[in-house]
Image 1 (tube, rainbow, N blue to C red):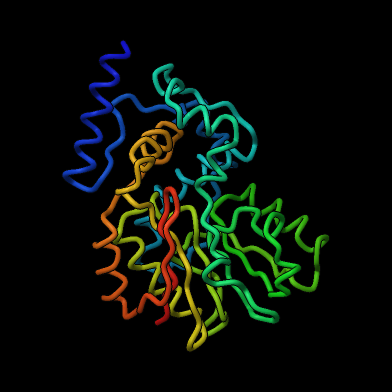
Image 2 (image 1 turned 90 degrees about the vertical axis):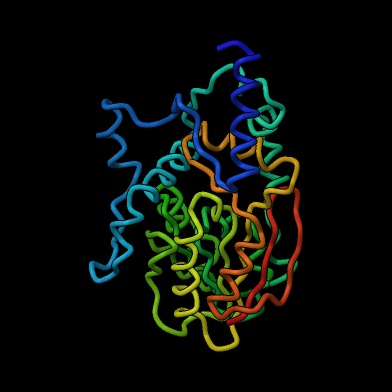
Length: 279
């Protein structure tokens, strides 16, 4: 594909994003498992212990597994095959150099810092307990993660770092939290909302409300389509294997309100908008 052809197609995709608030992946799909990789993928994309009584379990299994596969490959430092035109994009160069992660991170602690002895649930936690100052916060850490690689890494190292504060990581999606009613003072979900549609997140809000104590807070981030980097970032992530949904913040805010939540704090980043809500 020539650079001009790629540029034209990329601009067409961006127009779709602007007018329909939803990013559709390119015709040529990169970094999807081949037939030969499907057996390996069964190890890399876990079978989640979903409750059979949960009507949403099967509906989201395929998408959740695909996102898990994309991040498992990254955790294992596997090579991503991308077309030269994508590799020439500045945002790819930043991703390759490890710079993009710092620009994309959402500092949830700036609007919802965990407090001493609070019970906190980090949804989509990755290896959060190893890189953020949970020991300084002296808050009890519980996690839930779709990547079995991240889950296993954190469960093996977290208790070594601080066995008192680290309470373990469950394997599963955000739409079915493996925790009990009224268990947490704070729930956190950053870095992954864009991989799922609003319908999914409507279910997530219900699950978070279930596990939060009365008066507890939920802090999460939303990819802001108005940020200059957002469309290129959506293109990059799609080529890396995880389709991105770009939804207007106004639609998110309508959903938040309909779920019975009130926004009590908000903070803008280069890619993501942080929200702190209370039910």
